[in-house]
Structure formats: C-alpha cells, structure tokens
Amino acid sequence: MIRTRYYLLLVVAAFSFLTGCASLRYTENFSFFQMADTQFGFFNENKEFSRETVNFEKAVAEANRLKPAFVIVCGDLVNKPGDMAQINEYNRIARTLDPAIKIYNVSGNHDVENVPTLAAIKLYREHFGPDRYTFRSGNVFGIVLNSSLIKDPSKAPDEAAAQETWVKTALEEGKSSGSRHIIIFMHHPFFLNSADEPNEYFNIDIERRKMYLALFEKYGVTKIFAGHYHRNAGGRSGNIEMVTTGPVGRPLGSDSSGFRIVDVEGRSISHKYFPLDSLPQKLSFGRQK
Image (cartoon, rainbow, N blue to C red):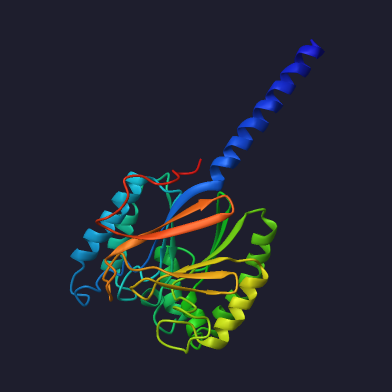
C-alpha cells in the first residue's frame, strides 16, 4: 500500500511539473492590445459621440474575435472630464468585452483634467478604477501611471508625490516578481521622437522626463506605451523604447483610427499599429491560459 501511494505521488508530481512547464511556455508567448484615446465626444465637440461609439464597438468586437491576453486603453477615455453620458458610454461598451479578456484603464488629461485636481481624480477612480496600479500577465509586469500628475502636479502635489514614491515600490515589486518584462503604461509620452527634445504639449517636461527615464532604466524597463498624440510616434532612450500609439477615436494626423497589437515572445516584444479596418485574421499568439 505504501509503495502504491509512493508511485501515485511520483506520477502526480511528474504530471504537475510537465503541465506547469507547458503553461509557462504558453504564457511566455501571447499578444495584447494597446489602445488609446477613445475620447468620447471629441469628433463633434461634445455635442454627441456616435462616431466614437462605432469605433470603440469595432475595437472591442475585434478583441472578442482575436482574443488577446488583455486590452489596455492608455487614457482619454472621454473628451469632457466628468461628463456622465460619455463615461457611461465608454463603460457600456467596455463591458461587452469577453469576460475572459481583462481590460485595463489608464487615466488621461481629458479624464482628470489638464491640471488634475483631487476632485477630478476622485471622480475618475469612482467610475474607471484606480489611476495607478500594477498587474501581471504571463511574463509581463505592468505598471500603470497617472501621467497627468507627472505633466503638471501643481493642483494635486500630494497625489503626485505619493505616486512618485509608489512607482519606486512598484518597480521593486516588478524586479523581484520573476517576470521577464517590466512595462510602463501611461497617457502622455515622455517624448515623441527623442529623449532630449524640447518641452511641448504632447510630451513630459524634460526635468521630470529625465528623472523618470533614469529610474526606469535602473530597473530594466524596456518599453513604455502611451497615447495622447492621436498619431503614432516613437523613439529610444538608452534601453527604453517609447511607443506612442494612435487613437481608437479621432485622429489628428495621417494615421487612421486603430490600435496596436503587441506580441510577447519569450524575451522579445514586437508591436504593430493596425487601422480598425485592416486588422489581421488571427494573432501570432492567442490568449494566455
């Protein structure tokens, strides 16, 4: 009887090891969707948002068809801060995403105001969830930031300071998590093309930019995904790639409305922007399990 139990334990242990390895291999290879600037109300100056509804419904339908590991929307979910019709429409459509696909919201300047206030941040948290948090998907450790507090902390200095302290803790957590990739998700890009470009509306002021980029470099961050620009852009700072993604909503340049598909394959991450009407028939890697 003892020998039989011993053999059974060996079989169970071997099965657990093999299935665990298979699961690990699978979760190292997966795809996720990075969206930005659904911005309900922007097409028609807050009079109505029918075009934003069509675009976001299309984006969510494509996610339901292609089944990525997760969807993350990098800010400006709505156009008018605190507008309940816009907020409710975004959330209504977001709820139609397959429950097996996690959706992560990121706050933008049109969600918490250009110069964020405590009241605007509180309202965002009530309707969209936290404005800073971490998550784990496969071998990706995601850190979500409220970039409006980095861009201009003047009306909520305590919140900005709290986030700055928190991100160091989050980076430590990411470093010790065993994940292969620590990725930052935010709304404002730190820079559009070059880490030393001058300050402007669409980037983060250079002093705070340098401080954060140095911190991320120290902890091995290799990708930062953002939106805000309503066009695609990108550049590098040391080992960090800054990826700025065009809008699901209204474009401001030659890039059509769409979103970015990101493929995580072991130690490498690749990505490509797709217009809403030119999405692939299938993903390189299906949803993780």
